[in-house]
Amino acid sequence: MSHPDRYDDRSPARRTAEVVFVRHAQVYGLVNAFLVAIWAVTDFGGYFWPIWPMLGWGLAVALQGAATYGRWRD
Image (cartoon, rainbow, N blue to C red; front, side, top):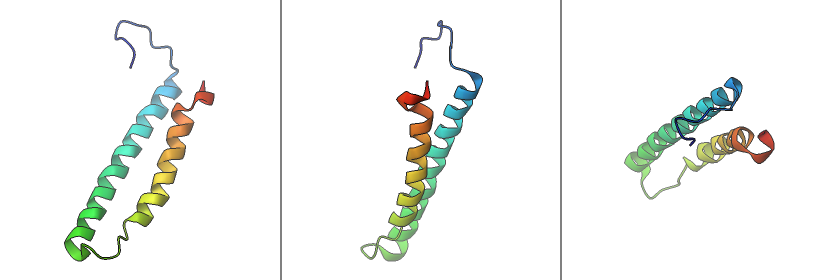
């Protein structure tokens, strides 16, 4: 994170993309925590079915993060 007195040279589109990514990652974490809680209450020790939404959606979050913060972005 940059120093607050420094000029923020990121474009408005870049700042928006970063905010959108952070929100996406937060929602991903919350929803998957909820799915794990459902699994733990209903079938703890059984087949861990939340892995499938975690992997699928996690790939989308990872790709969005790479596009937002990747070195080729600038």
